[in-house]
Image (cartoon, rainbow, N blue to C red):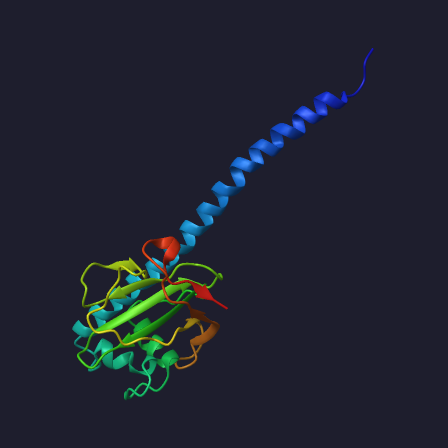
Length: 194
């Protein structure tokens, strides 16, 4: 009477497991990348909705561009820091994702652009431009703003805690930079750098 498995049977089982792993791991990595890209795009959609809410809200005298002035170098605003600006936007439903770094820039004509990317090194950067009117785009060489300003590559992710007192609900979670795009498409888009 035979007990146990032969070496050939064990090798076949190991080969089957290896083949399944070779299929599953790349699919899992693509799924993770898609979810990270979706988080970046969702944050930009939230920014665009906060823009509309803030610009149309009768209870505030601030415009969206005036509120985000702390993000732009040398801009003047009654809101002194980017964290204060995010807390102002939070009153209109904006909630920053601590895993998504973003930067906002504005020009003198009231146009603004928001850039966002997952904080993982090498993640693509997406852009929302209120002058283009086409929603969220991948930030590649195909995106040509009419009036480029440049954010200097600095991007920050913030953490929001609604349980804290007003004025201290928003804290910096991580700081990143972004590279310039190298071509067209997501693979050649601007990337998150350390």
